[in-house]
Length: 120
Image (tube, rainbow, N blue to C red; front, side, top):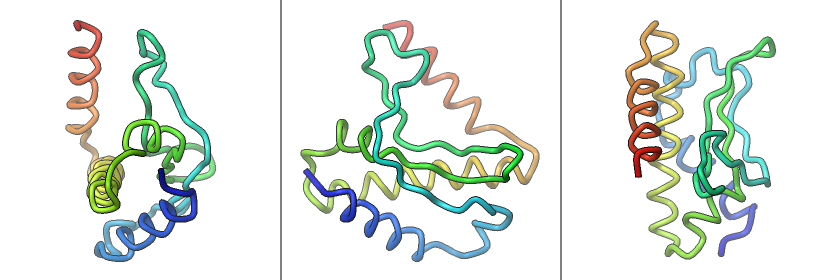
């Protein structure tokens, strides 16, 4: 298990390693919240939201859920968790950049993953 602070430091390191241009118009920045978040389509509270791209009247932001991340990846090695955090951040940054480009291919992919989950 990793502390909130350790996960925050890893996310900061990953974010800092990416080109700044990818964060254009992400005026709400990146946030790590302590809670878990269950996906509204979860059948048995078994589908966790690890991160999400949020657009609202306050702007555009990426939020990570420490509780969800620990629930899924808390038993990983540091390297394993770091690699998963890279994937989560890349996924959410792609949502942001697709929004800026006026496409939603990743959103369609996400919907397909939920459809497959619901069929199980």
